[in-house]
Amino acid sequence: EAGVTQFPSHSVIEKGQTVTLRCDPISGHDNLYWYRRVMGKEIKFLLHFVKESKQDESGMPNNRFLAERTGGTYSTLKVQPAELEDSGVYFCASSQAGGLGTDTQYFGPGTRLTVL
Amino acid sequence: AQSVTQLGSHVSVSEGALVLLRCNYSSSVPPYLFWYVQYPNQGLQLLLKYTSAATLVKGINGFEAEFKKSETSFHLTKPSAHMSDAAEYFCAVSDTGGFKTIFGAGTRLFVKA
Image (cartoon, rainbow over all chains, first blue to last red; front, top):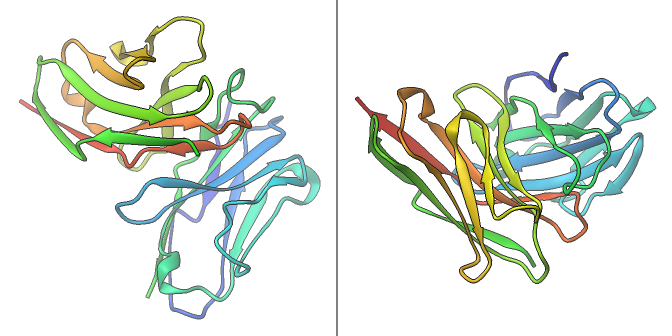
């Protein structure tokens, strides 16, 4: 069974440009999460999808970030326009049933974003 | 709000020595607690999780962690370190809603030959 995949693995862009990150969850997983780790800091929650619906987007930093999950399968996270402080590693995770007490979140390898 | 503190951003042990990675949490309700490991160029992998069934939790690769409510701790241990254990380890707690994970800052483990 394939794990969570993310594309690209690395992205280097200039300030003001747009970048789109993609996450493919494990097949059949309704729950999809985005997290971000800024250099030297904690991994922070960004948002949670249940199928195609945003369940919780309380961690999204600002309106330059837009996440979508059309059709309830893969998800994209767009940053437009990118700023220097957006640099970091963006992780995606998926889980089957939701609810951490009974379910496990499986993480992808992350996308390392560098904004110059 | 829930939070996690990992003591020591870097820990170095000799091969064969005890591994002890410290984690303290704050939570107003009984938490779910986790340890994740990240090997180079890989995603986060769940080592073990505490969900109130037993205070001593055994995980993969010989790791275990003990939940101590009185100390609000969930330290990770392994009796004998292997070179392959070199990685970054994250302690985490679940949000009261049970969905989002709150992570500590991570501890990088170095294993010396």
